[in-house]
Length: 219
Image (cartoon, rainbow, N blue to C red; front, side, top):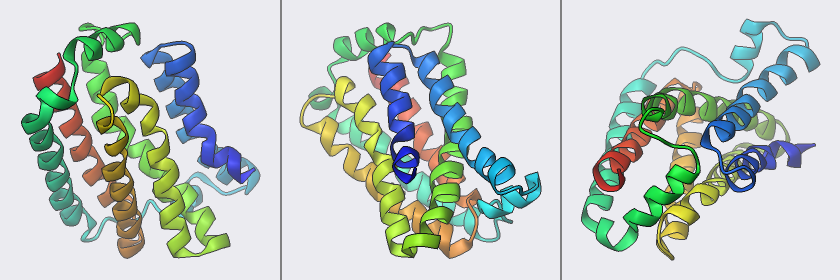
């Protein structure tokens, strides 16, 4: 069962992007999995209340985590946007990227929705699933270090499915390394402050950097 939980998000993205070539379908499959699995487990299987489930997956008061989230998020934003600004001529085939995104169903009409999903829904649900739900379950069986490593690994794994087609080789594979490092950092941060709120803030700012890359260097 645990392997279903590990690979489930990747399978949803594979089906949406590489089988049906549809970003809207990918969003529905992927985010439905991230949202439903923790709450089905908490409320239907473990018979917790809504509030107990939120506490179980670490929706606690933010304390000082928001400050760290803002600082780390700005570092991520500058690194992503600044790095691509310097290297975009070597790492992005603009015509190929635009053609692929159009094939996946990303149009000017839907771009606002996509941006809102990426900077609000995505960080909330990804952090809920990986740094909340999966972190909690893995810590109970394997301990803290393995929990941080495993969640970072499987979180970064499905980014290959979107990065490999868009960017040029070998950058598409290399870009997964900072995603993995971010996952490790957010796992540590979740443990340090016993809440996911700060990791969501940091994650959102990193995603804003990705959105800016699209608007400035691809669109």
